[in-house]
Image (cartoon, rainbow, N blue to C red; front, side, top):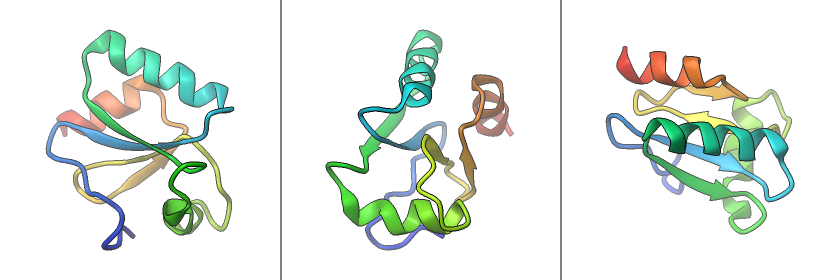
Length: 89
């Protein structure tokens, strides 16, 4: 669950937890940008205070990209189609 240090995204946007070396993160960011979807990126290397949240929603793993939606739910390595569907729900 999000905590006081985990920013819940505004409606219509997402928060994406990433690392600099993650190819899946680079791919999803590029897809979001091409579609004009707004997101806030939190790089876990620069902001380790968010590691606990990522591990919590991923069964103890630091899997990225982890995406936080405005309703407080999260998805691990979602497709662009999943992000779009969940934002429009």
